[in-house]
Length: 162
Image 1 (cartoon, helix red, strand yellow):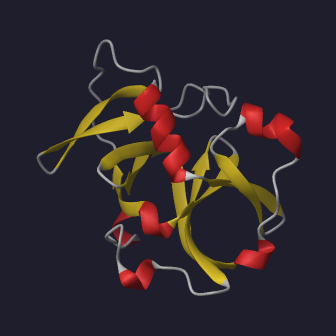
Image 2 (image 1 turned 135 degrees about the horizontal axis):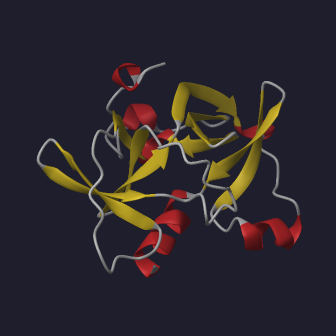
């Protein structure tokens, strides 16, 4: 799936709200790891063509990009997730929003939008994992792999707090 195939969905769109037993998620690859983001928080996906560093920003904000006239802060969560920087640039940004906050989350790929059963979500192992990955609220098995479910309000609070 290319970013052009990903629909632009308002954060509060009724059609994006999960039904009683399912959840719509945007799957994203960061490094070799899979993550799922609740589609209610996803505004759009765009290719990052240019990133401008901004001095004295919180360490998680690596710069900004111009998205159709809007200056979008770009967030790299690799360090916060304990992932190494492989030297390759992240090609896409998933615009996530909650309330008045909106940032572009840098990712390597966006393979698909998927509906998952809420019953498929697994608890994160113990407090130890919660300490190392504070904005991963659950685990989601996807085709033999385990992905982390991103808790967007917690992620955005971390971005705002630096």
